[in-house]
Amino acid sequence: MNVKTLVVNGIVAALYIAVSMLIQPFGFTNVQFRVSEMFNHLIVFNKKYFFGIILGVFLTNLLFSPMAAYDLVFGVGQSVLALLITMFTMRFIKDVWARMMVNTAVFTFTMFLIAYELKLVFDMPFYFTWLTTAAGELAVMLVGAPIMYLMNKRLNLEKRV
Image 1 (cartoon, rainbow, N blue to C red):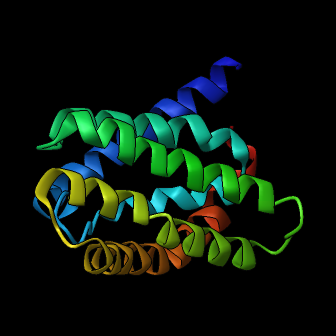
Image 2: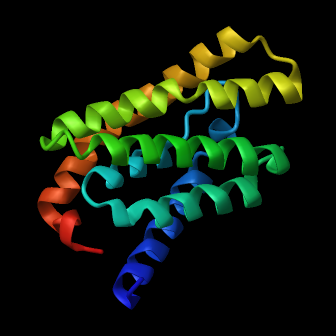
């Protein structure tokens, strides 16, 4: 990894953490309304953002989660799984909007891991918790898609790393 990629990924991780801090009370509930999840869309512009996103998720869960031990496994695991699936599908999908919609669907679907985590820790009902966490993720990812699209127009995210 070259220095530029390392620095950009550090900035992505820092932004993920900073945005997570702003909405901290809502980011760790059964709705999981974590605005910083919109940074997951960076992966559709360049797969090199993978490490910055994962580092941001890891550090956010480590620093702010009331159940950090579980979140470091399930939360980071869910992000890794969803990003890898999206990266695989990008081979077959060239349109940026289609990639973002697939990314949104993948992240929304894989919230079953977070629902399972909440069932383990708090004995919350699995399917209802999956519904609420998925709804929060879907909302953030859908609102984040045009924001990230406009950021790409301004910053050319494909070439930043």
